[in-house]
Length: 265
Image (cartoon, rainbow, N blue to C red; front, side, top):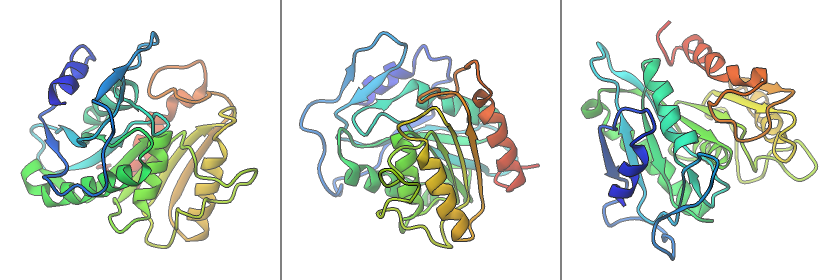
C-alpha cells in the first residue's frame, strides 16, 4: 500500500520521505491482517491506518550531515488496532529531522498482532544497522521512539535480541501488572536493556503506571533512565500543544539525548 502511505504524507507539513522500503522480502514470520489495508474515519485530524499486512519503513533521512546522523525508528500508537500515522508519525519525524536526527516511521502489523509487530520492530533495528552506511546513519546510535502501544512495542524490542541503542517511551501502555506498579512478565529488563527516556501524565489514569513500572525495572537493573510524570496532560497528546507543561517533553527529550551523547552537545 505504498500509494496510500504517500497520500497520507502529503499535506502534513513534512518534506516527502526519501523512500519507503519493505521490511520483509517473502520471509515474513507469522501472518498479516485478514482485510485490505485501509483508513479508519475520524473527525479529529488524526490519520488512522489499519489492516497492515505488509510492514514498511518510511525513511526521513537528514541531508548534508558532516558525520553519520543518529537514527530513530518511530512506532505510532493506536492500541495495536490502528496506527496514528500523522500525530505519532510524520509530525514526530519532522521534529527529529529538525534536531539533526534521521528517522523512519515503522508501519507495523495490525490489528491485534503483537507477535507480528514485535518481529517487525526487531527487523527494523536489524535493517537499520545493515543499511547504516547507505543511509549515512551511525550504527551505534540507533534509537526507537514509541507512543502508547508503540511505547509498549519499543519496550518489548528494547528487551529482545535486537535492541536499539536507546529508547523513548511517550505515554506507554500495557507495561504494568493490574493494580500494581510491577512490570509485566513478558518484558524482561536486564543490564543490557538500553537507556530510556519516559514521559507520561498522571491523569492518564488507564496507563500512567507503565512509566512507574518500566522506570523502576530499569533502575533496579542499573540502566540509565530519565522519567517524567507530569500531573496533567491525559493520553495521546503527541507533539501537539496542550495547556500543560507536558508539552515541553520534546525539549526535555532532546536535552537528554544530548546529555547521553546520542546527539552532539
